[in-house]
Amino acid sequence: MAFTHSLKTVNTYTVNGVTAVTLIDTDSQTAGEELNLSESFTDATDALVAFTLDVSQCKAFAIWSVGGNMTVETNSSSSPVDTFALVDGVAVLWSVAQPNTPDNPVTTDITALYVTNTGTAVLHVRSLSDPTV
Image 1 (spheres, one colour):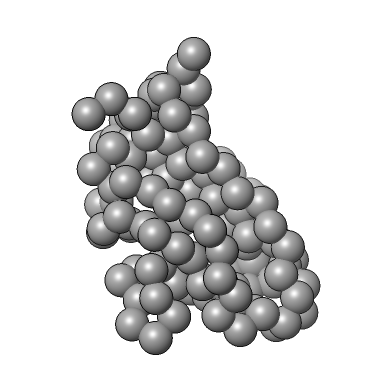
Image 2 (tube, rainbow, N blue to C red):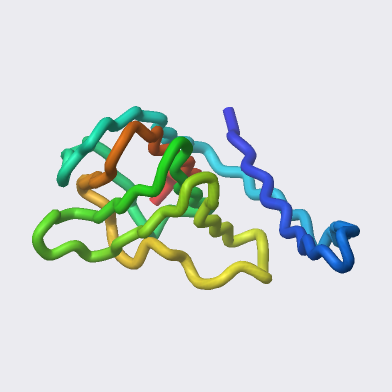
């Protein structure tokens, strides 16, 4: 069984009260392994989340928060490898299939996530990997 993630890049702008949307690119990536996370946090400080990802096998990655801003650190709360300062509803997206996206925001294997937020918000992570070595 294969899993497919699709990314769509759009440009939205407003001039004199009129909003225009321009589709820039749509790409899909398919791979044999999908790992997803949707977890709610309330006033968390370095809350440990069991989540692992082999960056060398990763084909697509998305992380976002809904309900409030959130800081997510990878592998350590005191000396994180990657830090995501998530703004409510704004996703960090990456896929090998989409050439217009920046470099993979995950720079090394993820062994755990540490979440900090105020109020209540839901952390969402979507990842797609090739399980063959």
